Length: 214
Image (cartoon, rainbow, N blue to C red; front, side):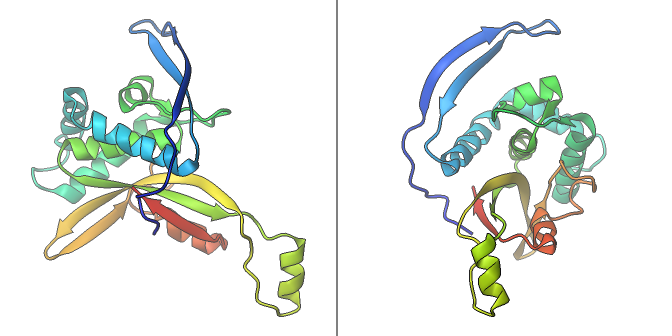
């Protein structure tokens, strides 16, 4: 686990524009932002959750979802139901240029990628008092020819020294007795949210993974 206290330069806001919603309704405002690092992007998403979790709209949506099938104080049930609602009602789409949607926009448009799914779920959970972590997965690039040759000679060699943050998922933090239960809630997977751990999936593939938890 990497510390959330990462070094970063101030993000730079560039041009912005407003365009009509193709389905009618409120206009869509977009800002182009230049980040100094992927860690800074993660901090931007964490700040997005911290901002929108206080809004009445997010709280109304989250309570409407969880109390449709869970009793009060059943935090694990609340977390699973919220993530599974997103999995069932929001479509996953690939992006060309990375686009970060605020949670209300993801809820309104019903599509997004892994960062949009994560911030929507995390915002909903924290709006109803369930702590949620954003887990960024740094995945190493496949080993190059030199690394494979050295490994073939029996010489220990780190598979690769390069990689990038390629995935993000939310993880509910739920007190259980004197301990803590951390529940991965990746709604972009084919398995029902809460039943699969992206870190274990990556390990089974042989990926070398580090995490940044925010």
